[in-house]
Length: 249
Image (cartoon, rainbow, N blue to C red):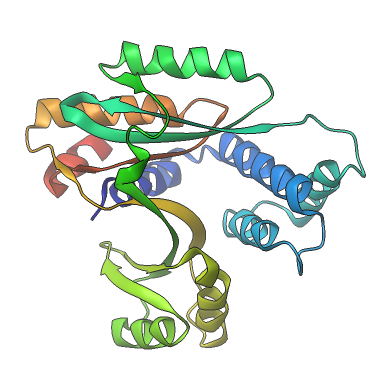
């Protein structure tokens, strides 16, 4: 499993434990606003907004909260204008990291992200330094309670590229343009996805077998992920499941 997939699973489990909903809601709502601002409020014509709407509903964000965010993004209601920024860098052991942010102050956000890298044993890099090690994909999760063969058959027929085992969930990967089609096919078959989003999937991974080094990598990823302006953190680490489980504990 890729670093991002493992970290997403860790967030999923930790989030279920501490129920840190407010920060999750705030980050997703910001994504909804930006999608509406960049592509308009008509979801039939704005694929990005459709994806963000589905992500918000998967996270149980109330519909009226989502609708207000869309109106702020489209200019129907007053709101802050956010800018999309991506930072690249390295975690300990040479692990490649991409940090996607939405900010109303580029200079402040850049300085704070650089500080988080430095304080946690990492380093910022120039644009393009690590992004070539990732590719954009659509990623859906489906509860393990559904039959693997059925999930695979439905997903593949709709354009999915791969299905992997993530412990208590199946992870379906597809081209970004096929994300909503695959989600729709799964829903129609009664295989309701737990989540669906666009993600940066690493094309190669860096093994981090030592527990001490793995914890350093995970501490940096968690510190970045906890920043208010950070929407997504992607990394190409490969850490043993036992070490990930110990970190979750």
